[in-house]
Amino acid sequence: MNPCNTKKGMKKILTIVALLLPVIVSAQAQITTKKVKLMDFSEKTTKIVLSGNPFIDTELEDAVKNNWEISPYEFCSLEEFNQLKTKDDYYFLMTVLGKFRKEAAPGLTMLSLVKGGKGADIGLNKMLEVVTVPLCSAEEPGGREIVFLPALIDIIQEHVLASMNKDYNAYGGLSSSAGNIDKADSAIKIFSENDLTDSAAQLVGKLAEDSDKVRLVTEEEADDIMAEGREDCLVSYVVAPTNPMVGSFCYKMLIDSRTHRLYYYRKHRISNTLAPGFLKEDIFRMFQK
Image (cartoon, rainbow, N blue to C red; front, side, top):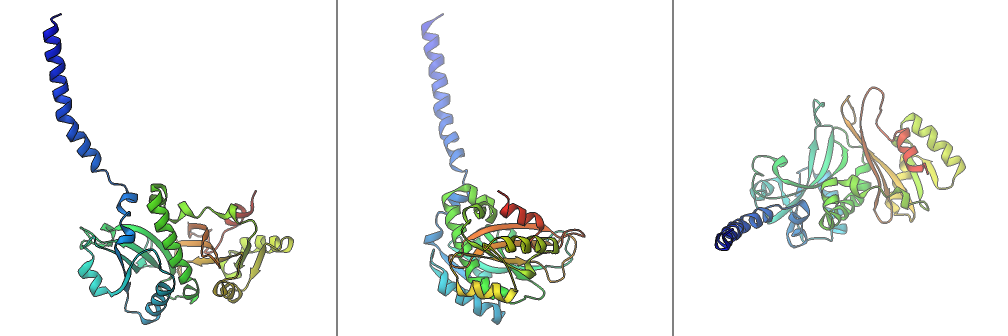
């Protein structure tokens, strides 16, 4: 074998690799995860979009003023949102209607945090969704959303910070950061009687008889505990359509009334056999050791 030919061949290979390397590096640089996209969150202004409904807008303003800490914020109208939504200088927190595939009309109002940018003029579904939290029934809000709104604002903030820390949280939604029930053994679990299906209510009633860490109370009592911010209490909150149809979703939460940390979060699709509210399997999941 001619050593000169070998050296020439090696030089050709090295030249090809050298030429390809910038292309490979460039391709790798274009892979941007959701975590990376959110790293500018604390530096950008979050626009709180007011819907024009004075009842919910007033409560949202108060909840944000008293609880929002993780970024600069400003309030804006829907008209301003439509003018600014294609700019990546802003994030937007807004109420949206949630309509699922099998529903004839939207059944829920949700709080959604999205990032402005290209494609936003096509629709909300083209914007980067940071997190969406169920707020209340779209048709007939029951009023509990006002009590829980400050907690929901804090839950959104906690999820943003978790998403900036790990892609697992960024892509997993609230479920990724709400499997904390095992860490709350010392807390009293407060269930509103209206948040439980019949079978779940029977089970919670039995648990309450045997343990001072479980309480079955009226909706008014549960809301009072939440509003007072009692220490070491997890309070139930269920969001479902007022008139659910088969295919609608029901969201179930347990929230710390003092810290506003989300300790349990699950949803199920409503059917002929699965009513709105915590199911028996939810209760088993919480208390089965």
